[in-house]
Length: 239
Image (cartoon, rainbow, N blue to C red; front, side):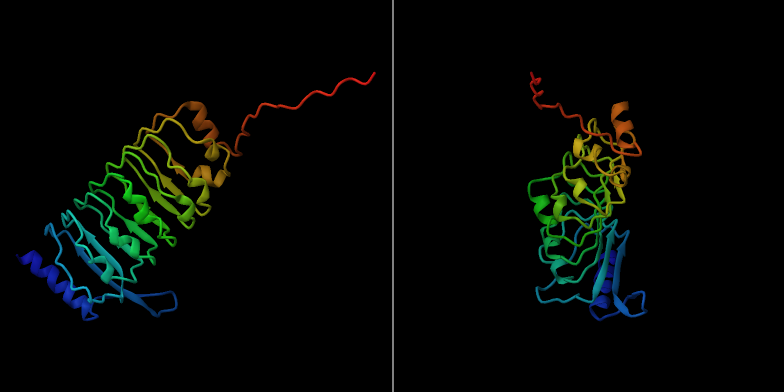
C-alpha cells in the first residue's frame, strides 16, 4: 500500500508540474523527468482520458514488476522523448507506444516479451527513434522495418534467442552499435557483408556460432566483393 501511495503521489506531483526539470544545451526548459524505480507495485493506476502529462519528456518506470501498461496510460505522455521500461514483467510492447512519435529512446530490456506480428507495427511509426533496447527478452525473431527507422543509432538485442541478423539493418546509415551478442546467429546476410566498413563494424556478434570466414569478411577493412558468375558470351573469332 505504501509503495502504491508513493506512485500516486509522484504522479500527482508531476501533473502539478513538479519534478526534475530538463534543460537543453541553450539552458532552456526542455521538459520534466518522472522517475519511478524499484517499487514492486505490479500494476499502474488507470489515468482519466483527459489527463495531460505533455510537459513530461522523460519517463522512467524501472523495476516495478509491471505485467502490463493500462490502455491509454502512455497516451497521456504525448511529448515523451525518452521512455525506460527496463526490468519489469511485460509480455508485449504496449500498443500506445505507437502514438509516441517524438520518442528518440525506447528501453524495454529484461522483460518477458516475445516478438509477435503486432510488435513491428507498434514500433515502425517511431521514425525519430535513435535507441532501441530489447535485450534479454525471449524475442526468438525480429521483423522490424528498419528502412523506416533510418535514424537508429543504437540497437540492443543481446540474448534474445535470435537465429539470424535482423533484415534491413543496412538501411540504418547512422547505426553506431547493433548489440547482437549471446544469440544463435550462424549467418550474416550478403547485403551486410558487402556494406560499408562503418556499417559492418557496428555489428557486435560475440558469442554467436559464426563461421571463421564470415567473421573475417564481416570485419575486413573493405567489404569483400560478392562473387557473381559471368554470363557474357565470348566473341566469335574474326576470319
